[in-house]
Image (cartoon, rainbow, N blue to C red; front, top):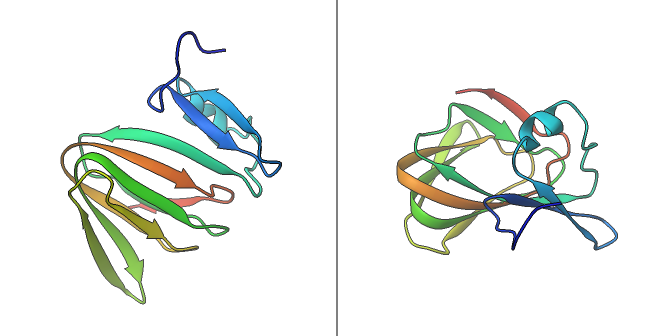
Length: 130
C-alpha cells in the first residue's frame, strides 16, 4: 500500500463495476497493465493524471468506451481523427476538457509542460505510431 496521503500523480484509481475503487501505485503501473497482470478493465475506468513535456509519439483509441481528457495545467492540443480528417481542440485553461468518443483515434501536441487528468474506459485500448 502507498505511504502517506495519495495523489493522482503517484496513485491511479481503478473504478470497478461494483462502484468500488482500487488504488494502484503509479510506479510500475504501465508494464503491469501491458503484460495483463491487471486484467482487461472490462466495464471499468482508470483515473490518472500524467505530466507531459513532449507531444505524444503515438495515437490511441478506446473501442469500448469514451475517455474524458481534462487539463489541469499547461497547454495541450487534443487531436482526434474523425471521418478522415483531424479535429483539433485547444485545452489552455485549467478545467477545460474534451471527450474522446468511443473508437476515436486521438493524440496530442504538448506546447509546454502540462498536467492532464484522464478518465478512461481502457478495455481493448489500441495504439499505433504517429
